[in-house]
Structures are given as structure tokens and as C-alpha cells.
Length: 125
Image (cartoon, rainbow, N blue to C red; front, side):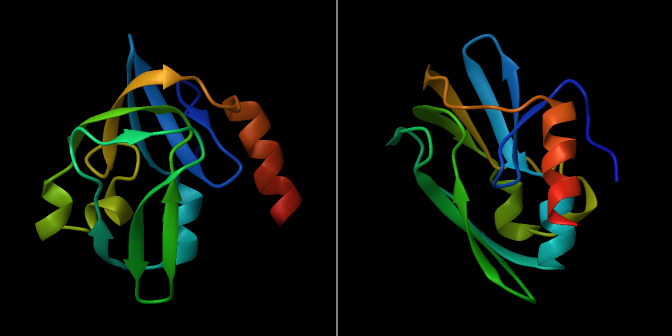
């Protein structure tokens, strides 16, 4: 399972791609693999404010329903509307088309490097 080096991660299996003060957030390949086929994603409202560690939505799969937690705090600037009609994008392209939300960052939160995230995965196995 690949862990892209350019991203940052959380122990709860979310990833963050920073571009200036905007963070794109999704769930990792490991998380989508554990969930199985994603059938529904609950997205937050654009304009809502979130603190680092806040729940911002839900991913529902054939196996489970899981809360999503934001690794960084800020204002929701965009949600991936494509997930409304195609939640399976999270399974097929978790680090690309399967992104979930974008925030204008105001709180950095606690993020892990790719190497540190790989250690978390090893500890879980």
C-alpha cells in the first residue's frame, strides 16, 4: 500500500495536501480499504468553521459508518460534490478525485509525515 510522501497524515487515517493556506483533506488508501465499498459520504456545509480534530462528516460503506475528523482547523471553502453521485471515488482514487473537503487553514493541528504514518500502520497490523 503506497503512502504518498508529499502528503501529511493523522492517526485516524486522514490525509492533508497543503497549497498555501488551503488544505485538501481525504481519507487514506488504508482507511478506504478497511471500510470496503463506500456507498455514501456526508459532506459539511461550505462556510462552516471547524477546529482541528472536529468531526466534519461521515463515510458510509457496506461494512461500517465512520466519522471523518479534520486534521486542521479552518473554514470550509469547498466540498467534493462529485462524491454525492459517485462516493466510490474514495475507493478508486483516495488521494486524487476522492478528496472530500478543502479548508482555509487557521489551526495547524497535529500532522504526521508519510514515514511516521507508515509506523502507525505497522503498529496496527
